[in-house]
Image (cartoon, rainbow, N blue to C red):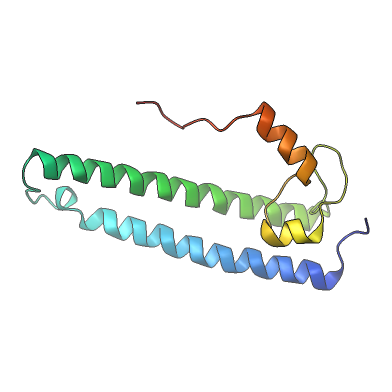
Length: 130
């Protein structure tokens, strides 16, 4: 498979830029929402059910923000690979990652077969347990 053409690389850079703008906006919105929560400004949030619901919502918002921040780090890493000339190469087998895969997932580190093997040997695990 031939390496990425300049036009394809420009398209992928644009996708990374667009996604970064969206994620940074979401992180800012999450920070603003956290500052507005009743417990953050010292207001009473109601009974135990309201408080429990608030804690659940806070937890979900926190996990969403962490996911967004992880994706921002993946975008930075992809830009680093672009700068060093290794973007689009599978980190496991060294083969070129197809343009269509990179279009769908511009931060992809692996080709589809290697990603499938990676997911089988590294199952997703929660960041915390209950």
